[in-house]
Length: 352
Image 1: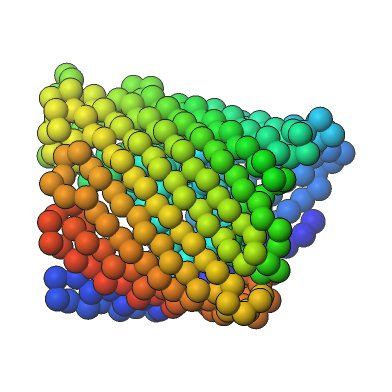
Image 2: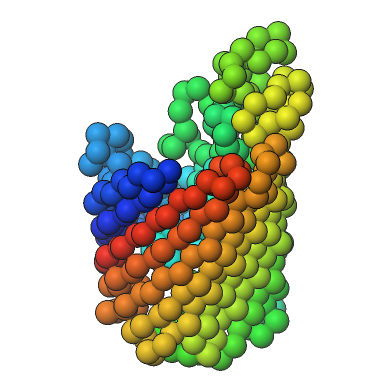
């Protein structure tokens, strides 16, 4: 049994509509236990207490059992609460990223699923040059009409729609296996990854609290009948550079085919989301500079959200102990033409 943990302490200042709000908070207070449960079986449990500090609840992040008996054949099977095989931006661990915040393709309000109770099988072949994964999960959809959000039981609420989600992705690493962790500390040889993924979520009809006789009963909450996502992504590591880029198309459909409100028009919502993040190690293993740009085009909103970002990281012991600063500018916030948001985030991180 091995104990692990992540501590992220943040200071954040956000200016919107001429008003500035700042706060100091714990982004993550995670404690994990990794267990050798038996021959060829390992388990992992990770809890996050950050929200409980402000009076919310303790969140279960990972809680799964993994079978390694087929690892010599390049296969592993994982059962339990875990990340699903969709979105390069989401699959990179939050503690091993360059930027403090994920970009739009990795954000759950833009349709990227969170962790869920699932059975997942992963494969690595050809000296790990070909990697793939597939999963089937119990997942729930948040009915807020301002977003498409799909999460597992630990992070959902009792008003969410229940359903089943299937997801899969494949990656090709033509120059050899490339790690998902961002930041190239050692200026290693060049590695490239090209990937694609997809998911489909379907409401099982057990919990539609905002629909009666096929008609929506609320202007701000709507039950979704289905949601789907398509991803094309790629990454690069080497010579001091770390680059990740993604494009997502997300669509969702309400149970009431005539519902209009928020992101929905006549029952349909469509997102086109793009993002690129790049870092370069100015001082080997110590100082990294970052730049990024993401967009979110919501069909029902008049303008495309655009978010340039830049930042810098000082590494004391790679990702185990680092200090980060990030500046993000948001144009056309929430799809409203001319709406601006300025955000500055400073973070200290320790991993043990």
